[in-house]
Length: 80
Image 1 (cartoon, helix red, strand yellow):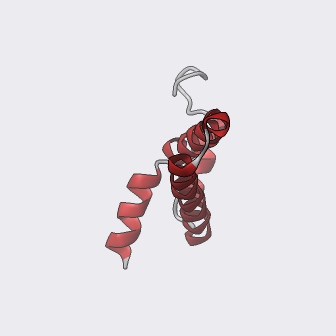
Image 2 (cartoon, one colour; image 1 turned 90 degrees about the vertical axis):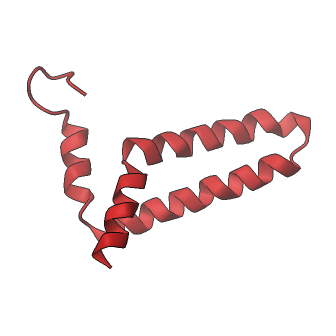
């Protein structure tokens, strides 16, 4: 993200710092579990709740993708 010219976005700098912290990965695991639970709810939801649950899934997915969860999870596996 190059919104600030040649410098990195402050949020990206913070995410880079947090990516080495085990507690941050634990938090992202919790977010991922919430996303999976919402997907399970979607399969059982009535028509009126599908939009609400889909929005929750999308929000959780954006958090995970912004934080590069898949990459961080792979790094965690390599460290163990």
